[in-house]
Image (cartoon, rainbow, N blue to C red; front, side, top):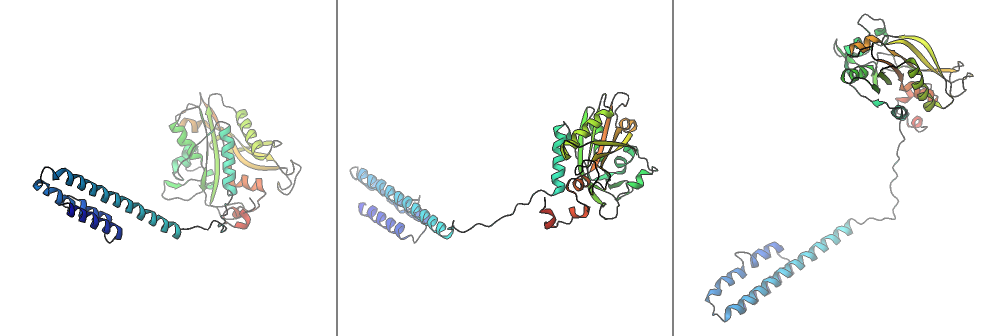
Length: 337
């Protein structure tokens, strides 16, 4: 039986060395439940008491030698495979890498981000809402009934008689006031749509940033202070504001707000068209009807609201004379920013 065990060891070692079979097949053939070594061990019952320990020890030694040889061969094969892979995937670190140009922010995105940062610094939150809106939120809830002439100015694109593309981000403020009670302090930047012809200062798609504050004791002075703080951070510490009476259905009193020209300081130049002032936004105290429609008692709470076109801020800030440049994706233009 010793001769049989030695023969099994020799055959197993030869098979492992030659790698004609997979290592798992070799293990099963010689060490498995039905393998050659197991068959020998099953015949140990016919041996004498003196022979069994000797044959058993030899059988265990054969098993250990075969298992050790299989493990060694497995490591060698893995190392060889890894070496081949490394050789095939070798990287020449001296070869110059490819250059990837990282574009700066688009001027629209950059200015919107700056505006958001300024208002967040003043305690405002950012609120978002759907661009596809119900007519009620775009008009009626903002004190603009169906027969109001202001609806002609804000003519937009209708999907159905009651569903449209919002012409302003003011509907976001209505949603906020319906869902949250005062104190409220939010801005709502985003895309808006109007049925305008494309020219140097108009587009059927543009961007707005509107804001609203509602709380007890809010006055026009709070509105003025907020807009002055915004203008100084956006356009420079020397910026002055000018309020001109105006009419918006959703605010009373209402005003158009101009800033002193940040190029000439108000003396008059090409940027401000010689006037010394640049119109940037509309604002006013929230109309009591708007508060009442959102379930807020105008006898207890008051508020102010403001809205500005982001394109207008960009054009004023960077002295851009044609809005269409912001949408054409001309790399020569964008590289300037």
